Length: 243
Image 1: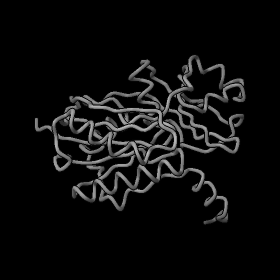
Image 2: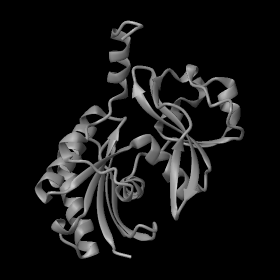
Image 3: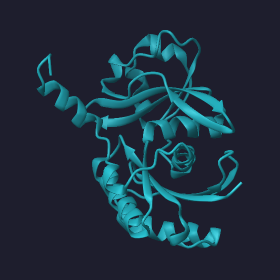
Image 4: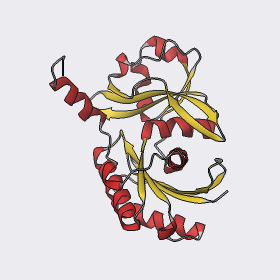
């Protein structure tokens, strides 16, 4: 099968990361990866990381078939930086772009590192709220993917619930689990393990985007916009019940 190249980056949290995926439509491939905790340094770090993974893989930017980035939720400033860099690279190379949920990336990363099959991903949204979503890991035609079990949402920790129709215990991934003591007792009972000190990573974003690329989900760069869940909630609250 023909090999393809996909470059992914993320700046949605205090971490900054870039990953290059090289593989084919069967899901087989290899990753070249850079990751660093670098608060408020994303603008300075992203492009040197891009150069580093390209050099390691021995490929030119013009060889990339598609680009991807963590489109949120997360830090508004970081997401805007990632969007600007990813769109700029895609425009410059004349290639398409994919946006990937940072919560989905956290869920897939929990599987890759811990073998977790059910994952509750949660990020600190500030203002006493979380960005959260529940996922189940599934395998299909050589690809491993994190399938959402509910809508991703902005929610107070005490109001968060797990899907009642999905049996089993969940792995908790993300900085939202710094607030685990505020979760409902029923939710805490189903979180058998959690890891708060983990941020979204371009490695998982690249794997998600690679599958999306072969499914034809890549779009012109201008059409791929950041996802700000808090903005979506505010917009809905301003509409009437029949809007």
